[in-house]
Length: 443
Image (cartoon, rainbow, N blue to C red):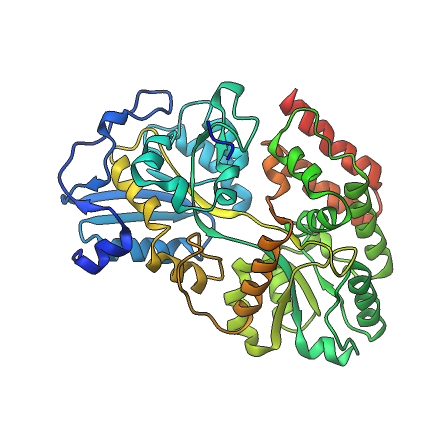
């Protein structure tokens, strides 16, 4: 167990994709419990016409990766359907349980903790062995995709592998350079206190300090980022991973919730944040209506396009200037349906994620490449993102999002953050509600 659309395939393309090559082979069979028939696992795929279906949320980089893969394989078509984030868990649970599920589904921790025990997605260990994925991908990039089905997939970072990352992410603070200068903030904050002081300076200058979406995920991503710098990140990780005895009723988590209350009362968070969507928060920032936006690097390409050189990025700073850098983050990742008639082809798509071609597509989409040795080029704000990502990986690392803690956790996070902002929920009650949901799933 771990703890841990179409062109001819040229020799160059074969090198980029690794050990994959064309050959005819029969459709691989499922044992019916999420375990693939290992005798039929192959890194060689058919040269006959194949159509795969794929359901996903994040674009970029998904569509670009699909285009890159199918350009290498003229016989493979991938029909993809993008599903809004808010609908994804319900939609993917329903479609994967149907008689005609997508061959490939973007991994979602909340959904997979139902789908994995039901045997609806493949244990990828046989493919990991065939392709050498344990050595090809960073261990930290795989840990959230491993779980033990015998325990109901409730604990992560243990057991078998169920997904492969297609792009790594880091969440931090985008800033409007012109607005920051106009407010009189001469240097980027090096500590959390300095960041909070900058919010006050910006507010006093008559600007909106922080563009925030509390209608969707932006609000609880802010709480997570604050939790990780205010308390030991390992306590938070144990809670998300479902380790026995873990709790989110910690000083760091309560302190993060209190910061949100304080910032809302001080006017640093817009009064209408509870009615603002993630896309509207992004638009407000890109249009110069706020100085800071805390979001992930998946938005960096769009911001670079709309703001040019006027946008920068840094990880939310810690309590001291020399504190090890830490940040929320995750991976766009993909799983294979146990009902797929072409799992070897689907696995070839997953293996493509570590190719040099895919690395550049991941970077172009604002993500970090899963192949950390691949040479890529980037410009503008993506240079800042890459620098911050490197600092975080050399520091305390990336901590995955809190929605992974249980299938129903988002249903507590979203209204809880809204209650903190509106003043109807106390920090103590907020973290207690999260722990109650955690215990309902893990006990």
